[in-house]
View 1 (cartoon, rainbow, N blue to C red):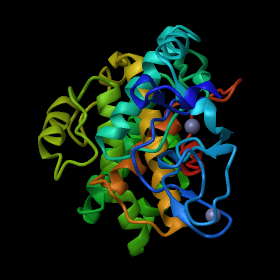
View 2: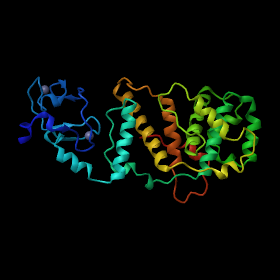
View 3: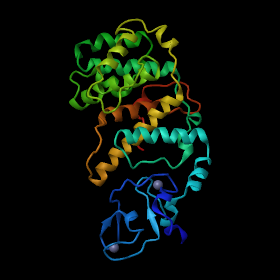
View 4: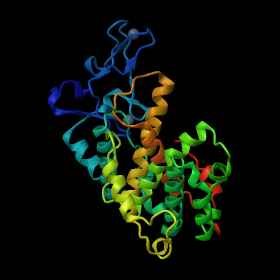
Length: 310
Ligand SMILES: [Zn+2]
Ligand SMILES: [Zn+2]
């Protein structure tokens, strides 16, 4: 095993599967119960002296031979030149966004996962209708007395079919329950992210921002007023690049799994991400890419059924 004889600096330690670099943390547990940083002892447990041959990766969850983690310069060059270059660049971009938020141990192992060209998105018209409905319901949560007037408006503008059953219940209920109000009030975040997809918001605020009042003001100035005509607005909407939209989709999908894992492992949140905002973006962007073959019309039912599992 020649590699032990080389100097430490001659290597970069990284996972063969996902390219994660160990962060100096204590991620490994021995069968004797001891926990330590396995790269400090070349995978030998300092308590019971057990020599491990495979090392589990905290970022992708896959075990690979410990010696394979040590990459020479030549190894790294070879890895850099393998696979699809464009997808590799997307992987780097997505992972550095996550690291920027403090999520250090999540890596994309499967490059095709990053390929937006295999996805089918709803039309800009349908995305615009959903945006208006989310925006309207988010507003009506605080202005219940206007529900009747704006229900009529959505009807007259031919958007009623695109209102979800839950939203219809809210619009007609005498006294909507608290959970419904809470859920629908987050719809404004969904409207904002769709507004960004449709070029009505120039910059999507980061997930850890205190408030996104500026972005929301920009959004409001670029969409029709409540009760105003939606034609030709809805017909003239154009998407920004699907590459950008898909980056945001995957980012929020991974953030959602991060929070799910925290809950599962009873660990503390090390980010400053507003998880409700991220969840709402995840839900909305997942809806946007949920296109069914042979679909005739994007009705409101699809919204209530959108899948947010990761
Ligand atoms: Zn041990
Ligand atoms: Zn890995």
